[in-house]
Image (tube, rainbow, N blue to C red; front, top):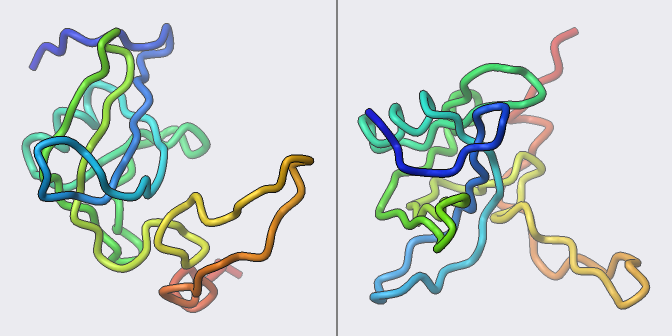
Length: 133
């Protein structure tokens, strides 16, 4: 599949992942930010399940493959420059590997100091992601 998007020189495109909304335009909470390459984008569109490119592991990453906390594509958008994608998804449990609904749970003050977290974790990350020993 050929994509008319502006990928980075290393073949990636940034992806904003948002909670699906039922309105004509996106209104849900931003759940996470990730990267895709052409292969992960094609797999996502074929399967309907979010698949990313992990820059740290240098491999494809099916969201939920370890945790079971999957993301099903509802709809998607491209920005006006065609260099950022926005996916609206139905998220199973939390999107963040730390146990929160969103990776953007830490609010900061004007001095960039963390404020108290205003939400509870949806799952215990230490029981979902066991460290290999």
